[in-house]
Length: 375
Image (tube, rainbow, N blue to C red; front, side, top):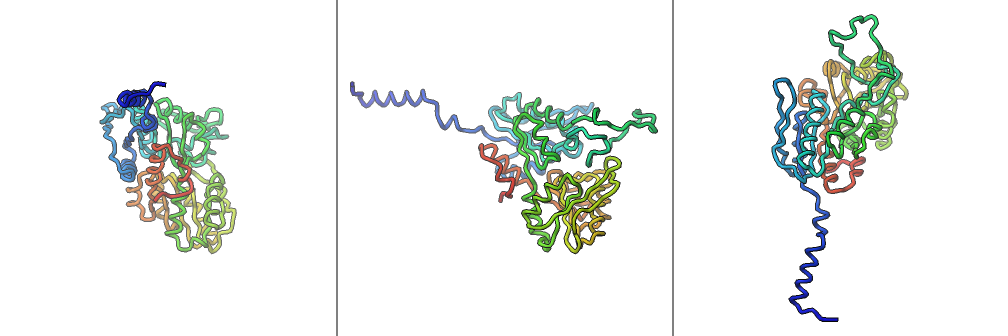
């Protein structure tokens, strides 16, 4: 076998290295870009501050006919893009803005587009109920002047004609070009199955547990209460981790947003009652539940909610209710609500979204966040 001289051997090694794909280049992930919609810029800023990067440049505006226009102000070619937009405030405008931003990044050759949606819009319209009046917490429809002229014969929404709007939103996000969804405390976990793309549903539970232990001195003598039967799984999980008991309230609705009767199942006498729910809209349910708990002998009542929507008479109801505190996360902007109601306190969950973004970008598991708060 011929022996190669040193110069020939060196050239052969160089040629072999050039022809072999670089392992480093194959495994290198694209750079990360985080953009914010107009629904919750404060949360987006907290996320990028936690990640140690700058918020991406984007301009959103409306034409005179109120069409939404979005301009991405920097290159996203080959980038790993995250768009933060919550389903709050002007929900329809914000949803359309999110879809346009996703599509703008996708057709600008972004490597991957992830929609970070802290509060998923239309999550309460996740199934066909027996009647429209049975939807737990579903928003009351507002009639336009030219609709249902014969009010005495106003139709009741039947199951066969009720939309599954959460599925429609899932389809729109996928068609717009989203490759991945990150959200928190979906109203119904089966919404994850509406998507054909990966969905990471984070939980506020670890942050809630931390807040309870740090801010309620009598938490060992507390009882975790669900304001409806649908939240039983949520409260049993928290009660187990605190090693306390739980109770639930069964409610019957005459129509959406109006509770007809409440029945307490469990003993709350001489205990601190902690109401836990995924969201509160007009707050009729939790305020009635608080009265029921005090009548049953609870010493104090707290309410802890992931998504504080607080529409309509919610703030005035909380002000006149018997809560020690109403605690919400910042998946929805709460600055104005906290000014209007001193009982409202806020848990910052930006670190959970930032860690989820970091782990997703690096190809790591996010299951750690299901039971731990990142520090």
